[in-house]
Length: 215
Figure 1: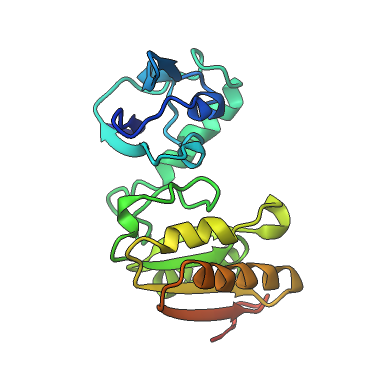
Figure 2 (figure 1 turned 180 degrees about the vertical axis):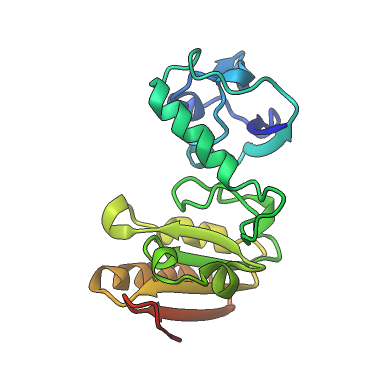
């Protein structure tokens, strides 16, 4: 059993954006519909998810062929690292982590993912988890996690976050660093809440570089 993508043929309009986004060559548009043509080429990371304008792509767990890095279009070392990333977040027996959903990168997650409905969301700056040793227990538990860094990603998150909040989201929790570049992440979250025109709770935690937090 491993994570791969699934394409809803009813929602797919055959635009081909997912095919272009798939670095492994696992997707092809056939007769006007995108298809996962080789499951062993799908690394399960989902670069195609955020590119789909119809929300037709989702993750599933399936008993299928293992990912074959030698058959894919990406370099061998990149494929090996990708497989390691998937394995880390599976909550293996004995794991004490609170992670329950994948992916967590803001630019990768599907904006219409079903797990957003009824969820309390945590939006965290990339650095915060490395500064706080109790980050999982304090911030992640019982929340859907999204991470990002507006300085590194060079991406405007406001519209994407707004689309996510249009789901049945209950609350937003933002954890940011007490450094100037993180002000931008807070601005975009607040802007997104205005854009989605929904009244919901927002809690902002500001973390210093020594791990202490002010709310």
